[in-house]
Length: 406
Image (cartoon, rainbow, N blue to C red; front, top):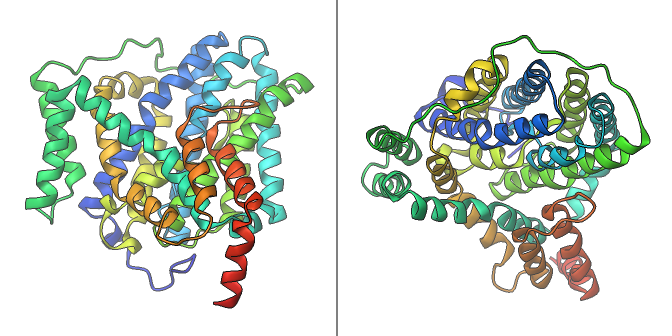
């Protein structure tokens, strides 16, 4: 499957019930819990409502724009958003670092990502990494969606449990109907019936974004810019690239990295942290829930991108309504959408007599853990440790020799 998908079906064909419903699921996932994390970080930094709205505007509008551009240009289900773990670490950093210095660090991170993409280094690294280790990292990093779905069914059986049942019954009885759409609608009806849709109490109002002039400091550079860069490259981009490879696509790795760098710079200028390629949303949009024909799945990321842009444009009004949805419903729908991606990743990582099996197992377990070091989350370390163990055991050398003899 080529990068630009020559001879790809028309846009009208790509916008069908499956891609639209999957794009909506991805957008709901990205606009609920992650938005709360950003608002918590803004509150920790004592940002004004105008600055908070500017932050949301920057990351959602630019993240959505990345989705739209890649969907239309490459006909691939590549979704843009922002680094969610990056927003989480900012909740602690902004208590000590002034926001104008943080904005300078956002821009610096974008510059570093852009330089790495322009150098071609990331593309060469992505092609060098053993596929089983990459797939194991993807399986481990996304497995939380599956366990989150189970936890949601346990905590809210009448909403999440009935939604899950509707998903599987639809897949068995109504193959022409998107199961994830039916599950979402059934779960929404159950939540309405049980009175679990309650407007969120948030302090945002419909105000104009307030932009912040950047300032640069070494403290902010090492505390914010360096971890953000590692997260964008080692977590978000790595997940997205691995998921696309697992689904049989040939992602434009260097251009994805360049886009993440440009998005980071522009988001920083507007007062938000990196707008970049998003791992979880790309996983949802590229899954089999977006349709059996992989050539049409880019419609899901296009829908996701448009909804992200609308959310960013009207963040002050949209947040309370989006957050009124039960979290259990969002988590179970996202988990159900991940089934195909997880199955494919496990099968490619641990096929019988496959290469780098021990390294892949290490990558899986590290990615599934909560391991974090130097402000960098587990997916990055999963790749690093998986490769290190395989190299130590001679698995990588054996795999390369087998490829050469094939």
